[in-house]
Image 1 (cartoon, rainbow, N blue to C red):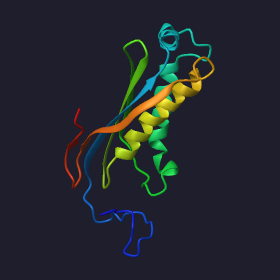
Image 2 (cartoon, helix red, strand yellow):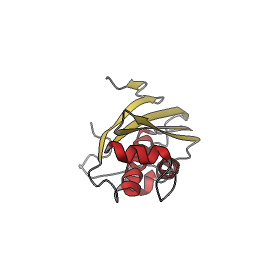
Image 3 (cartoon, one colour):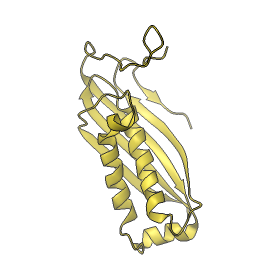
Length: 156
């Protein structure tokens, strides 16, 4: 059942008024594939725009906080923690992991997915002048804890 549709099939925001406040957490990931020279430039700190990972981390955190402005039926949430980690993977990839937490009445999957996605888009934006062929891959939910639906963990 799609929870964002009412009985007439119209889009609506899910009413969470009667849901219990519980601890909730979600982790998402994304990858940015690029030329090895581009990753080497990022790692060496040689990018003319500055520290690519630091800017992407901040962008991801900001995006998580703005998810309800971007995704029409998401509730505005008081996130208690947002962590965005970026690391080189091999010689041609950046792996991004975003974790969001709160004590609330609805989950934080969309916030984690948005954080990972916007961090990846920020890397693309900062590096597109030297590598327009970059690809953003495998944006997905890795894990979700809390709430009525319980624990979810993605398979390999």
